[in-house]
Length: 234
Image (cartoon, rainbow, N blue to C red):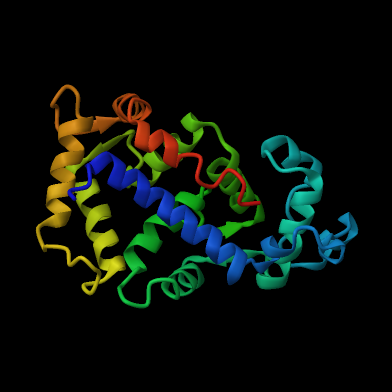
């Protein structure tokens, strides 16, 4: 069955989130599996024991949709797995690649890392991590779609070009590998890009704006349903 490009792209966005959540829970940040474990709760005084100290948890409670207790659990795992307090791109790529051994996930991981690296300083700290995670897991539909749009808008100029979506699609197919079943044709990335623009580019000007992206996604029942897949991850 041919997958509609919007559904395909947004499902891949959420598949990516699933991998993030799986990575956080099973590899990079296994603490998410033990959120009810009292031994995982850190005290505020422990925040000074790492090289990078995050902003106060009270402030992060205001900035995210996590409770202070949840942030303490998240921070304990972050500190255990990232003693320096930050994750650089190479580490991120290395971890991400473990979930796609059949393909090359490096380029997609690069795009994903840039979406998390909101300060554009080449690293993801605890604040970057929990703010994005809050959007992905507990943000409004609009917040989640904005985050996805920012991922696809590689040069961050406010619109998605055909070239940008082509890069994203090729990175996804590289990541999935050549041995998927059913086998995907070499022309599949281009076909999905064409379908994406046919449905999203309302005024046929060759780019997809945020408004066009939001309008199309919000009218697609499959995309709207997929937005709730991770509501209860943590």
